[in-house]
Image 1 (cartoon, rainbow, N blue to C red):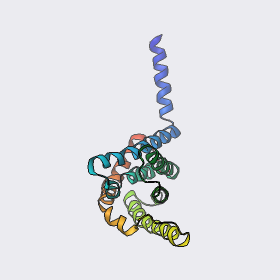
Image 2 (cartoon, rainbow, N blue to C red):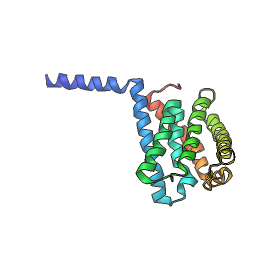
Image 3 (cartoon, rainbow, N blue to C red):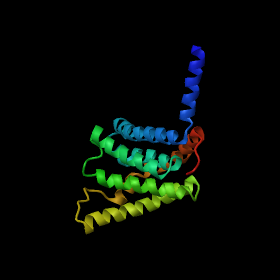
Image 4 (spheres, helix red, strand yellow):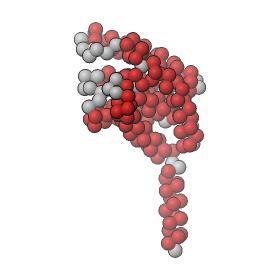
Length: 188
């Protein structure tokens, strides 16, 4: 009798975990957690400037955009940056709103492009157009609204972030493909 009960529980758990919404929630939570941990790991292993060089927080947002879509990747962007700040103090409070906007731009663009193009074309278009839009946001914030730039420069961040961009191009589409296959997700 106990064996039958255990089989029912196992079947119920399998049924719940195969539910599409549950997969998206679990994926979003996991990628958010990794989005908090990964920058910390990079900082510990490669130093304080490694975040700007390797762009570890971007990786989770981009993977979420390719696998889970706009809503999940936006949640990963927002929760990763906010909880990272609350738990580690990084990024600085002055940099937080700019980085939040930057990550949301990438989340939305890549999710939209991925519906029309393959993941590599979508990622390249997102990296280029995302930087252009981010430059516009930064220009507007500083020049039209009078906010401080806090030393943020789009050109400098692109130069410094070239290793991270290379990592994104090499690994993000491959990781996203394996996650989609493993979770049996469709491109929503």
